[in-house]
Length: 88
Image 1 (cartoon, rainbow, N blue to C red):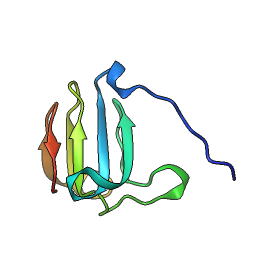
Image 2 (image 1 turned 120 degrees about the horizontal axis):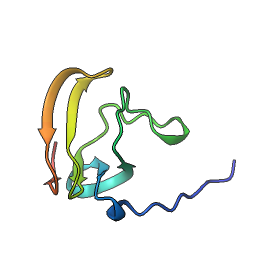
Image 3 (image 1 turned 30 degrees about the vertical axis):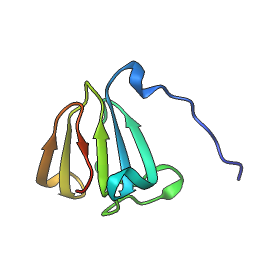
């Protein structure tokens, strides 16, 4: 398969979250542009982000709710706009 590149400007709407697989915004990264709901953290091409997110940044118009389990079970954390969390 040939990799596909999508050009999306998340800054345009302000509703986005960047997730990283390591502390301090390092490692693999995934940017989600919303609004959207994700009952599981399986990303593009089958990559499973479940229990892999270690740091996040939110856009100026984004809020996210983090759950401990799939399908919105056991709410853990709410994060507001323009936040940077180096270590979840």
